[in-house]
Image (cartoon, rainbow, N blue to C red; front, side, top):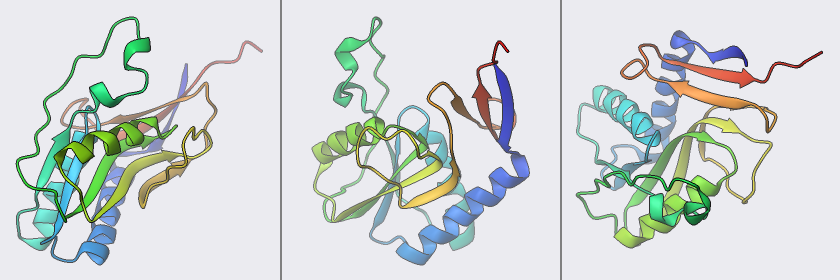
Length: 182
């Protein structure tokens, strides 16, 4: 596969910073807002956004991680079932504003699973979606993000990967395209 960097580390940092300021414009001091990352890769988005917000606002932001394994519509269709992760929501979401976060929005099915899983923890006043990357041309469900880091137009055969300096050693987003055979 050929690859193309669509966000380098500098643009990655700027994108995270912009998303934080967009969240601040809407949620001000976050006194009634919680951030929840969808397992597995949305937890990286939440960790980075939380760190940046706390640095800007000089206050603690309530964050959690949500495992959606058993809420996926393809759970029983896989040859090897996914291994559940730990959900970590140690606060009440009832009557809160919730910002669900994931790294890549593609078909919308992961987000739908996240919404189903979230309701097991209470009834939020409002749920918004933040996605670092929006692959907008392949929705299976009518889901769109309220906050988008970067929108990319991709083919179904392409793959988008978000890499984090804490895991892969460098912040960047890569578009992988299958090589054509001429």
